[in-house]
Image (cartoon, one colour):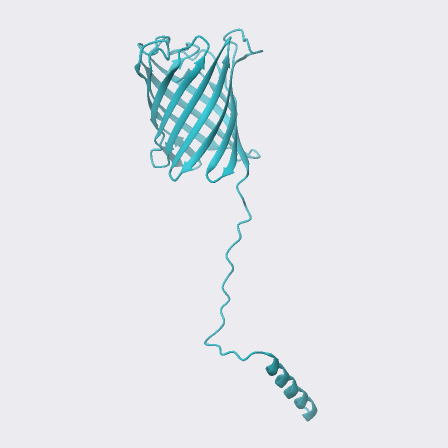
Length: 268
């Protein structure tokens, strides 16, 4: 290197040193990684679309079509529910459920025997979830107005308490059914099994009989994802055993019977 080049290099170093602040470093400089940024947000609207076939139509222990111990007719019972994330642990609920079959001449139209609409609000309180629903049940020439309060506890057995109140109904007495239940789940590979067990009590004449113990039920269900379909589809099936009280639910043809269901559901 020539003296001329050395002189220019020395001058450049002196100039740079005069501009940069003097800092004493005690060890190597470590750059801390930035915290990850979660760009995914929960959607405002989610829901479930279900297409199920049932052997019975059971309404809080009442065998509506009187199938009893016989699996005579296939009842198509589709449903849709929308959930709205309102923030702060609140969820708005809007849904509809249908009973479609040829068991009777429909006053609604076609083979649609019943349509139930519901709207509600759900709130998480830590492990406890509270859901309040208002429902309009439309069937035959009658209708019912229902208010449900459901309390669920997020733990191993998934215990719940349901207060099902009929607040108005044409030709029907107002009343209440209380249901205490558990619904433990077990995952075995891709299949999720559930084991719901319920015990219910009704007020006087809710089902046309007396008050007290109404029914108990125990079932097993299975759900498996349908990976070959586009979207979050699942295949679901189950059976449920019912023991009902003939004094509280006198309209049932049999006090003990087994129901079955099979169908597919889309979560979105």
